[in-house]
Image 1 (cartoon, rainbow, N blue to C red):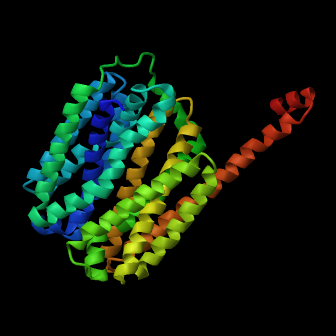
Image 2 (image 1 turned 90 degrees about the vertical axis):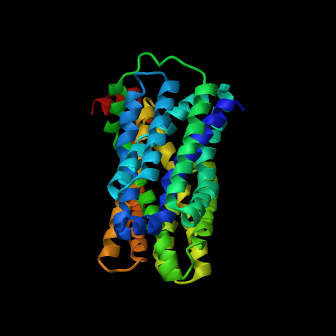
Length: 402
């Protein structure tokens, strides 16, 4: 394995940690700045919106300079953003820091995937990309729980300071280990934008928004839900996030395994089950054991949708997939922002800390309905082709002209 992949994985580890660790530290941050839990939830929403807008913007910018320099620029933004969060004198400054850090997220994974694939032989490219994404996966099992534990015991500012330090290590590794490759020639933004004329690409992205939004509706407010409703101690949130992370790892592996075999059935099962489990979480949140099991299932079912949805976008935008792939990463975070905002609304309205679970169930159900619509449109569009294939040459000409 090229050492450059390790540098990319470290960057992915830092990005994954900073994205998710805030959820376990919302009560501490809210108390420190004197804001409500729903207001603190804007730190999740702001980051997610930054990824959504930053992914296409920074990816387009990346066509103008070498990929190595772009990756270094992205890690620089990541470091600055996390330092701003760590040193923020006011809530507004921390929110700005979260947005600055988020601008690195989507483009790093988009451009990093291309770089990782170019580092190895053609028959090992998928493994190289998976190695980079291992950093993101491990972040949710190790980085996020550990960051939450540090934040609760020694202060949340230290957590973000450590994450900024991870960014420095990632930046140094990229500068030292990633080879300098000239920027690609002949890249035209209009070719990438053409993919968005495909209704199936847009449907896949809408499924991404709603499906993963369902996960974040519940997980954004996991700390107050588990401490106020289930009766867990503050320190237990760390281990609950470990369960969520382990579920993510398992779900991601299962989703990746079956995405190539039966993509749409995999989406039907995972999205349908996710909607049911999120609805049940409203009730299981009152029992410690059942709450732990449910959190692991939410992680597993939520991330089981990630490989098939990402592959769906790549398949439908196969002629120019780079921007579409990056925008789909932004779509995950649009779902995060939407659900965090909606979850905060229902809590503020007095429906309690378990109310976001119903929001999540509704969003996941919406994604499932879109999956059925997408499949129906695909069957309709392929039907004329089947007729033409079985027709005579004259019939073919007639069908084509028609």
